[in-house]
Length: 57
Image 1 (cartoon, rainbow, N blue to C red):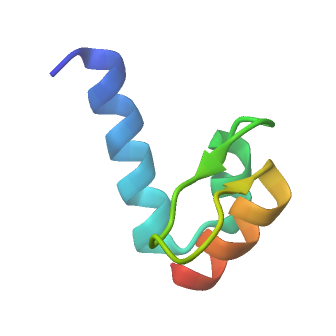
Image 2: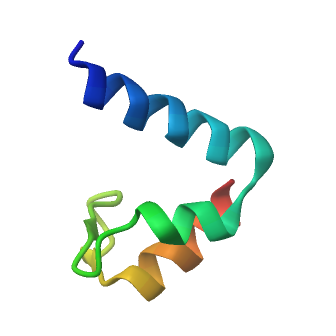
């Protein structure tokens, strides 16, 4: 695994483990989108994806 990818994955694990919602917002791109189960529409935008992931973690 490339070093940059490894560091990003480690940061993701830290964010989830510590439930760092500010860190989560920091790593999400402004135009992030998230696929969900097939019965949901695709979620687009930092605010909605941050909200949903914040509830999950």
